[in-house]
Length: 153
Ligand code: FES
Ligand code: FES
Image (cartoon, rainbow, N blue to C red; front, side, top):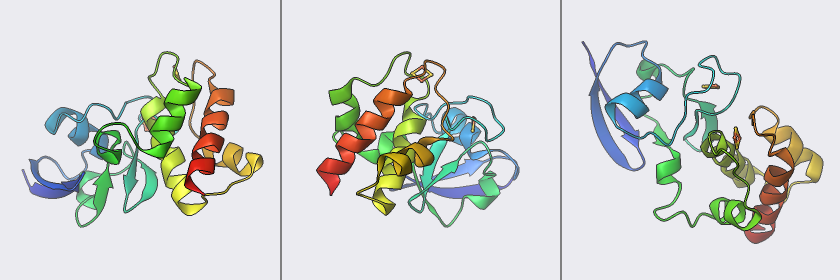
């Protein structure tokens, strides 16, 4: 079984696994970074979103063999203590209901705001559109992204 050296949250992890193992399984089962969630496994829900070189990507669709030589950030690495402006805004607005989708929502929002720190309501809606929330916390999510953008811009 080949070994892959993955840079995750600033640390290098050597992982023995098959080349086509999804990064999501590696994060959860090999490295115990379980903040990243499994929702659909086919790129449709956003629960598994991480940053790859700063871009939001679905970790269920990324094979481990494609994940070397890039910087991967998970929800655990976004900040040490939950103090990232997006996390603070999430707490202020009290967004989560069951919470299952929220790590993916926050990872999508934070990558989006890095690219567009002063978005319109429609741009926020479009950016967050692919992240499903079964508890329908969409209004709160939009409000929190707007609040975070005000802190960042
Ligand atoms: Fe990856 Fe749903 S688990 S998009
Ligand atoms: Fe429950 Fe989004 S808060 S799925």
